Image (cartoon, rainbow over all chains, first blue to last red; front, side, top):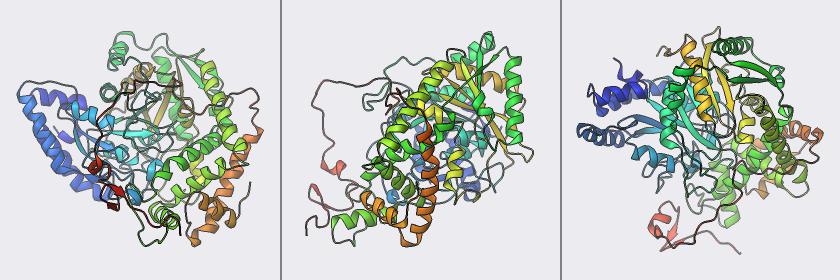
Length: 490
Length: 95
């Protein structure tokens, strides 16, 4: 048994039966990180001492007979989530030495559940990007082919799960940043409904779109991790005060009822998207047939605003970013360029040295969209399109329970291929960002491999707070396709 | 919408950024391309559509105004680049 390959469920069984200890599990993963991460670059910060200490505590509790779903399980966190006493950089030079004084709510919840935090994973700076090439520190390579990107912005978390350098991870998703890297790295990722998971302690990029979610080896692990992080939090005013179901029950439901009676919508607008890779199309259709084989009825639906979604998103997200990132001004935390003689110059020099090119581009685009004379034409219009996108989904979900689509138009592209072409990079978010605009949940489940051996995922979306249906369908697909448990050759 | 290097400099100033001179040309070009794409929003028929600024299901959240413990100045100022006693210090504001 290779400890580093275990799912959460397998590891929990082993820990509970005392076949191995949490310290042994953590050490196996730390050895993997030591050996491989110089090449992959999934982590920004590894915390071996903290992890071993937490694992020893978990072992103590296990010895006392305590049993809990995440007790002793090593997880990695996207480095956008505040961790008390462990630096949180957002992959930005401006926060290179920032050590939070508190844990994000999800981090407290994981720690209270007995999970072990292995370290903090790489991302596009402040989550702005789709390839993890915008990190202020280093790029992350795709474990399936190191000449390719892992996707982004949660590329470090997806690569760490895929390369078996953690048992599971958390990412964040503002326009596809969990689902797209999960797809590119051959793992499962869920973006929960907006409000399902507290954002307290998540460094904000676009507050009305950001959501934290799991990236795991399989659907069951995503359900287990979701169980641990969902719930109302008074510290986040957008956190939803709704009941949290047992997400693993969705899997039992599949085992008893299959997917009979489920209706899946395919948006006609998605199939005519330009630049859809033939392998992506092939495995999308293959997954569709697999779902049909499980009893899912396919229905035609329409999301008429699809053509405007990317444009509206790239007004709203940068606008919110330009406001959110104003706080990094060298006064309260982070970098300060101290040679400046006056306050305004200090602000300017600090931000310009601290922020990378993509962050600066988005701040400028957002500031422009919000500036006098342009506000109505850009931000105002984009928020109206957003309402129309939400209404499109509402109408669609009257006809179906889930909507299926590819995650991204192509498998993971080559490192450097889109770096100087931000618009082309933005357009790759076409299938994922509408769910963020509408606040809906979405999942990416591996559904095939391209001719060159790169993973491809299927996206499924559901109506607000219906992650259970996504997990049930995702689990069904996973059990049916013959690709479960495949690992990259490293 | 096409924007010039001068526009980039001006907007950057509004955002309290100082774009490196070697990047100004590239930014003007890239941001123009992005804005030209975004301009397609002008073709969208948004008549009657409300503004949707957030995705949260609730519109407002109220709670009792209860006094809670403060973390105290040492926690609050722990990451301050410069402090003087219990204050942040900044360079000259008014010359």
